[in-house]
Length: 226
Image (cartoon, rainbow, N blue to C red; front, top):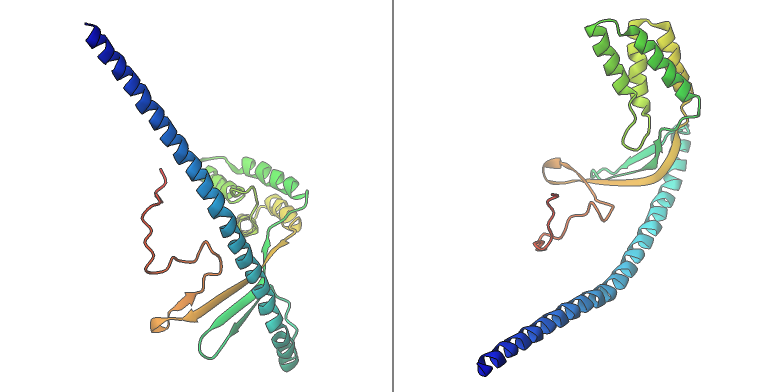
């Protein structure tokens, strides 16, 4: 009986020992993970900063390279172009596009125009057909995911208002249009070349859009969102 009690006690001690060893292994693994992250991330961030700086310098080089070309174009053709983008294509089909992008901005009076549009639309909703039309127009004035009102949609509303011949609705849309204040968002560079069969191929210029090398094995990351 005494031997059995000792055996049971020994089993308990053995289980405690195994538990401590497992806890120690887990702790060591977690420490190793943190150490590996601390070793890996800083050097990669340094590399990415260098790449970013190189891309910034390349962007300046590209714009500077086309400065004289644009001046020569204006002199040769006698026209100074006032546009957001300029496209340059070589005889071999390679293309670079430079310019700036704009986003729709509005002054505070646009909200009065939107309110007036909604007021006039409420008056129009008399039956099933007119209600359907009203909902379609209201959908055009719906803001995007970032809370922005799109000029292209406002233009569509104006077309609808002109087709309906509703003077008050036209005036309401004009209030919105007059409040349009486009804002410059970013300077960009795009690059294209002709691939096989003359297909136009875009050169990825951001790390997010660049493909992995053809021989790169990517089998450790779950890319399927749950």
